[in-house]
Structure formats: C-alpha cells, structure tokens
Length: 178
Image (cartoon, rainbow, N blue to C red):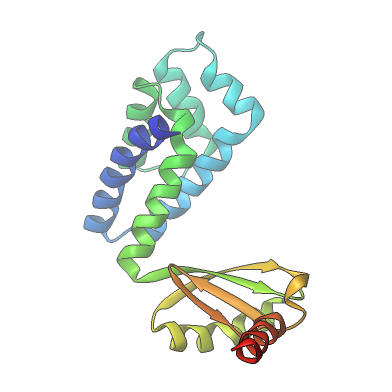
C-alpha cells in the first residue's frame, strides 16, 4: 500500500498543478474518474497488465475509451503513465487528485451516521445546517447505523456532532452516574 501511495502521489500532484494552472480542476476530475473506472474494468485491467502490447498501444487503447474528448495534455498524461507502466495506478491518482481538489476548494469530507437511510432531499436539507455548524463546505457520505436509535452523528475530520438518541441517552447516563 505504501508503494502505491509513493507512486500515485507525484502524478496526482503534477496533474493537479496543471489543472489548477489551466483552471480546469473539474474537467480533470471527470477525466481521472473515468480513467480510474475504465482501468478497474476486468478486461481493460487484463489488457494493460498483458506484456504483449507496447506502451504506445496500451495508451492508445485507454485514450480510445475516452472518445473524442481527449486533448493533448490528457493524451500526453496517458502516454507517460503507459510508458512508465503506471496505468493501473489511475484509481489511486484519481483519489489523490480529489483530495487535493477538495482541499483547494475548502471542502471537507463529512460522514453522517443516521439511524435510518436519508433520501436526496433530506441530505440536501441537512447540508446547509452542517456547513454552518462546522464552518466549512462539506461533502457528505451517509451511513446507516441502526444502533443510534434516532437522529444523526456527524464526523468531520477530528470533530464530531452527536445529536442521536443513543448519544443523548449516554450523556444522561453519564450525568446520572456523576
């Protein structure tokens, strides 16, 4: 795992600098997400792992998957990855890129644990309240935890907001013991 991090980070940082300079963070985010999905496909993964095709052929195959929306910089990036036998690292590169992009945009990841599943409207309604509480833009990940009984528990970095029934019961139990 540490090796994957060591390999992926420099590529992600280089692409991030390029995308930021060009004002194309969103475009590159989309391209990298697509590329990551393609190389995780079993057939594509087998093709790029096969020692038969040359690096240029592998780059052409991956480039062709994106269709006509491939510009010179993206094609060059794919060729560099192919030449260095790093196409399989694309999912990790995409993850690092997204982390850098989120940091640049001031967006923090928030995990919302809910006793019940939340639909899109409930998530959209909850987002502004949480952003005001944590004083940051947030990207929500919703997880169901029936042990909460009701309410939600939100974790953002090292901060936690617990407005669940279980959390309130535990707080009352602690207060009664003291």
